[in-house]
Image (cartoon, rainbow, N blue to C red; front, side, top):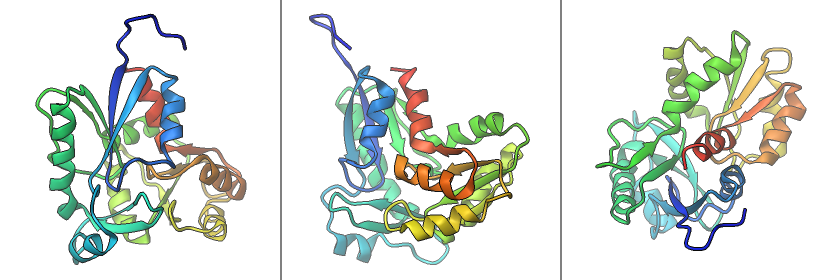
Length: 231
């Protein structure tokens, strides 16, 4: 898309709970934006070593479990409670840079995140009602990264009258066989599958669709399309 001389492109802040830039997911979001905004990325774990993350940010018993990706390509399992202050700091810093729209690149639930005046888009507020409308009574399957997330993921959807069946396959360390196993659970058992993590890619969607035989929703692509209408 050709820009007029002097046109100031809108900046969209994108914050991962891992490390930025997210070379795996960025192309999906940029494709949805169609050149309407420049991505400014930040990560809650930026500048931290794998050893530090494992020692200080791993989940303790009873904490909300999350997983994300480092710039090295390695995956980490982290505690929401421990990284939320780091995440809030990144949000505040982007807002201080003058960025007015900020996308959280995670479908997990983060109570209490805030901005002063910028618009913070949290996928967990968007996906459940959209999927409720999309599913329209059809059987819904949910693939998430970790088996430990099963109860938290289900609780996110239940207020909207959704009770999806769950299977685990990691977007970061899962093999094709793992996706075969997860998606295969939904064959003849679901009418629509949601890949409920912002780390899944088009390859994962294709695998899930192939092994399940039903349509598959890629969360980051859906959120990207929605966000593109706001910038």
